[in-house]
Image 1 (tube, rainbow, N blue to C red):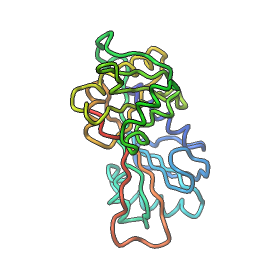
Image 2 (cartoon, rainbow, N blue to C red):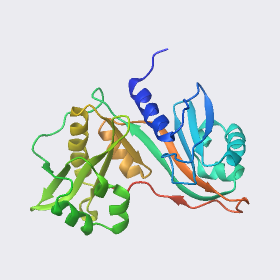
Image 3 (cartoon, rainbow, N blue to C red):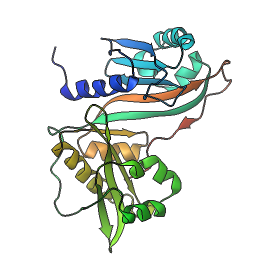
Length: 255
């Protein structure tokens, strides 16, 4: 059986973030206890589905059996669906779901040279740009946490789109991008993000794109990203809620 090298690298990332020894099964879901899991906030349940399998981390031994039974009762596409999870677990809060997409040199299209400018990630101009976009967009895009340089697009000398990436474990580059609201819909996010992705590939990193909004996913697809899986984090209580939990957003509109 041929193993997709990109999918294999993505799985290595999430296994490493789980914080305990485990592997993606051939099919279905495996649940491990990991109080220090980086797949989700502390005390939450993290679930990542890639291909035909999923891994999940829970913070306590007490939760392992109930979560294992809950996931076994669901078809694999449903294990990251907040509504379906709320039917089998006492879900109180949700982050996600986020689509997980990845790209490598085989699918990454050629980029137009000279349309972006490279600036230091901690540059004052980048901070000023982030202050100019809605606070929710600035927080969700993750640009303030990038460890790479920033790649900006200007209009009239003003930064109107910016992208970069944060170095994650397993040589993964988590891509971040945002465009000012008045300039969306013009392909600027694709230009900025394309420069960031090109830089990550030059550095032999695996670009990762996490998003929920269709606008963000559309930009990723235009850059050759393939959607390989989904991530969700849930916090459970002691009683099942009577209504579905609110679903947290992942990724601002960036087209």
